Length: 262
Ligand SMILES: [Ca+2]
Ligand SMILES: [Zn+2]
Image (cartoon, rainbow, N blue to C red):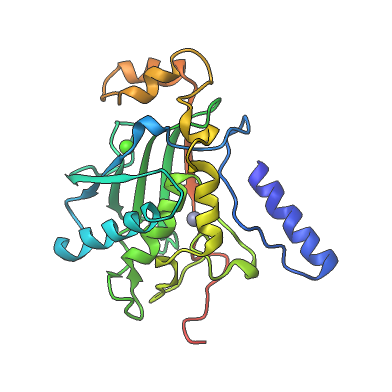
């Protein structure tokens, strides 16, 4: 697992040199080293929000929308998003809909959010992405102590939704893509210049990543031009195009808990 190798290397270097290894940003890549990206013909990337939010929908939905708008506002990045209503979806699935849903985890689970991405292993093209928030936490939109701030967590998950990987160094603590989060935290709502640079690296105008429609073999254009519906055909579809299922399990709370009182 490259990710763990990288993490181990970083830890090793930290031990040897006694310094934190800071990455400006880290892009998600497939097993075949293709960079994750939504193709330009998927813009605006449509998303739906659960019809069973953990708090008043009139507060929850705009908080999620603000998170998407924050990434969309990055200058010189071409990716755009569009809210397309609520969804009754209960689980992440390769169903042609990009959903933000709530799901209860095992009691005691420390996972706050996960982003599931369905992608083409050869091209890195993202075909479907779902964000799951752990409904066992208390959620809020005002950065209240002892509650998880919706916009803070969702802005981080949208970074994965686009192309970015987690950062673990202490030097990255102020960035949206820093892997750990705490109750009442709101600093991930706003992007660090390095978070923005990561997005621009993939979605700059004319960039090879966002402008191609695949390149991983015949049929990729078909993949990106239409979302498959649910049904038996999906199995062949998945197999044929080497779509792999990726679970980004973000242990945002397990390895280290940031102090809530500095
Ligand atoms: Ca989906
Ligand atoms: Zn993460």
